[in-house]
Image (tube, rainbow, N blue to C red; front, top):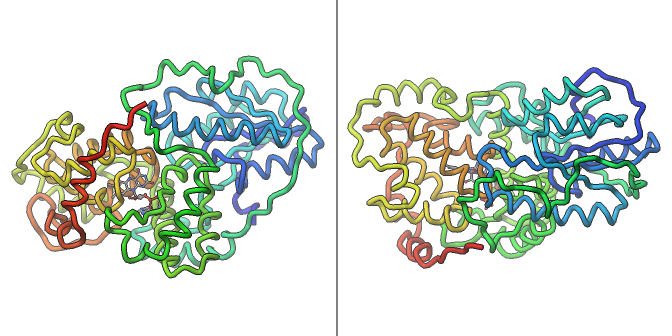
Length: 449
Ligand SMILES: Cc1cc2nc3c(=O)[nH]c(=O)nc-3n(C[C@H](O)[C@H](O)[C@H](O)COP(=O)(O)OP(=O)(O)OC[C@H]3O[C@@H](n4cnc5c(N)ncnc54)[C@H](O)[C@@H]3O)c2cc1C
């Protein structure tokens, strides 16, 4: 089924060159990576080396020291793994739209992975216009390729579930690794840099590194094994309790492509755990609904991406009195009158990962406190993308817009929210010991490097 994951990005069929290039962008791993595997297979067939290219882009949208540091953990691990496989790993600093075509001059073929956000799609399109050799992209960060799951934007998980799960069994185990000890390319790549030596002085350094949360495929698999053995059984009942510590913590790794969702899904299914269905619902149905959303709705980070009923009801309540109203800096430093919201905000700024249940409350409160829904969405995206290790992700835009009615249904009418689902602190108190959560977060120290 790998051919169902492959998309031809240009019309070229000219395949005379001295190497196959894998431009690694969204799937930053060597294992269970369909794009890398295709590049290796093609290199073997053509009898030429396969080279892996990574472009460090200091201007990556909302990229900063925290997210880069997590990503660099993965790149460092990968360099040694690729060298063990006899393969060249070259790193350039700059804009991929300039660098990929420059490096590809001697290529018979360029393969890349797939990304669903606007800038990722745009990079691939612009690079395709420049390349003289064939350029393929391979979807390896979803279990079911986006267009196979559905040919249109889905309304909700209820409409998407059946469609994606119909193909789940066909794709979850479709990865066949090949052993390839490629000839290392003897080529010189002028302008390439070492990861450690890359000049990242233009990077936003205002957000601290999370030293207790390391990136990379080895770490992702280590954490997954802990989750499978200790927490998956409890997942269904306890996942909404931030004190239970039973979540998988896979989202930052999935965001950088340090681990394959198909690999996680097959390990979860094979575990036979009673938590497996609840977990697959999150990992496959909810997560891939987010990919469906951003792929088919290019306004995914704005009010316009909300369903008509949500736009209408929020417009009708536009002039409702909002009190209190906080400044961005009060919000950013968690200084509101709501101790629960402040704790959630601090969990995000200090640990790089807010618990999933608190994210919903956090987003809903921004709607309640902001002067209009557009500024609430803007603030939520700004904070989420800046501090969450898993931010800047389709799941982030879908999760934030969910707080404003996306993928949800209309509820009973109330002020500010209109028919959009409301959440308040009584709900938190009913579901778990929120005060214990607040105490734990307030005891966290700044884990800065
Ligand atoms: C306001 C808001 C903002 C969010 N921002 C992000 C974000 O920036 N990046 C991000 O990856 N997720 C985001 N989510 C979705 C969800 O909260 C996180 O994916 C989850 O908390 C990640 O923790 P985990 O990996 O331990 O999750 P687990 O509960 O262990 O779930 C396993 C995997 O399933 C997927 N998943 C779980 N819950 C959801 C969900 N509600 N929607 C889609 N996929 C889900 C994730 O890929 C996750 O890694 C957001 C949700 C909301 C309401």
